[in-house]
Length: 487
Image 1 (cartoon, one colour):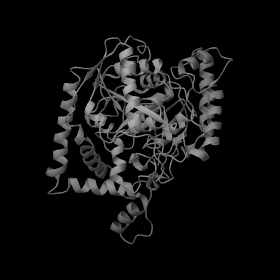
Image 2 (tube, helix red, strand yellow; image 1 turned 180 degrees about the vertical axis):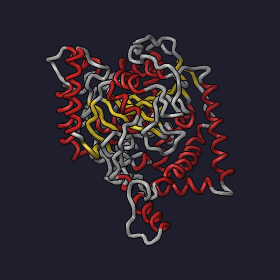
Image 3 (cartoon, rainbow, N blue to C red; image 1 turned 60 degrees about the horizontal axis):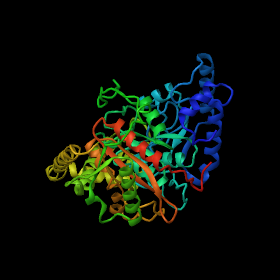
């Protein structure tokens, strides 16, 4: 079956019994994963036996119950910082490379109930810390559009998997743009919900006030179907919200005439690649043609977002990663003579350079004498950012920006310059700081045949409107190009 076919089509075929089975789709996805992984390094574990068994069980239930579930036996790939019972959850780190959780994350349990078939765990920047997927302890992921380029990060493995048409959808995670940014660089749809919309239970923590599970897909409708399946209140996650979950897929085709699209013109200046700017401005014109009203908005404190993000995120990382001490699980340095030596050697050998850098930064900004000057001040500016967006949304339904300042860049090009790497998150991290939903959709190719992404961010709990607007654009301007490395 063509992986570009929407999940809804697969539901009809599965209901028609003889045309296609979940086992057929899963077998093809597994074959593609095994064939393409040497070129992409997108998977850290491919679970052929488990996926085929789950697909057979799904087909048996489907035949017995005479009806396909919402995800219709769809093959799905899962980022390696989301817990799947019995499969590894290394977070791209040596310190957890032998960890196999005995439970499913809530999003995984709900995905299974909806008919999702998990084929494996995807590569990621270590503990989701990175914008290029070069920080993985198990090697860099490569972009299907050009294997000499990065796919974006930290969910680069999941993005590459969907872009290469191995699976139609995948789960990733976001702390500062780690779904939307790689989606843009790989030419697919990447979505993050409002903070609290999807349970974080079973998502290994990096920055707890920022982390979220997000969704990759080849089209907006498939992303909407997955969101319906996994969203909602979870008693296992106190930060999940008891807010009704609409049928996002059913409402996608609503008319967008009269919708108001806000454009912060100040963000279209310095640092933005000229080709990216032109493509995103063309997308604005498409919305005008569709009957939307384009209005200028101001986000005066957005220039502080990167600084605020890298203070808050590193502070929370310093606290969350203190648990990896060699005592309870994961790597333990056996050669240590004392307990303190064991702690030190475990963390020295288990963590990579970027994780160590962020732990040190976070420990510094939380330390006595610096907490007020850095961490507290960052939280105050975070509140100013929230107020900026609250005021902006008084005059618009969604805000449109580029997703990334450039197209995909060469492997190794920014590894020696952390500040240049961090600036890849300039358009995405604000939504995580504020807690609002965001989506990236492809809006064309550069002169070098590389994808360019456009981002929409919306109001809290405004996923329905955001998905409608993204769907309307992709229907008017379908992105059908295939990367050179694909099924």
